[in-house]
Length: 90
Image (cartoon, rainbow, N blue to C red; front, side, top):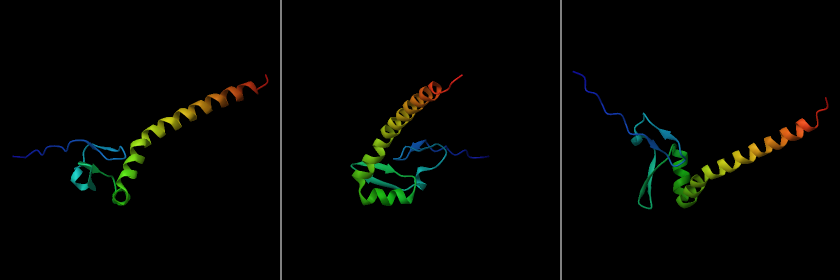
């Protein structure tokens, strides 16, 4: 008779990486303001422990910064395509 083990529940690290089939106990973690913070590497744990508030703020805002940068790049591509097509002579 085989015993089927329950799959670990999906979890996300502070940087936003989502892990589905991994046990969170193997990832570094720390308590901060009453919450358990999971991190993806020991290096991130070290940076977090050096200044938890700054580390959390930077990672919380990273999604907003990425979205802004994507919008700016799309805008520049649009401008370039307009410029590029207007300089062509047929």
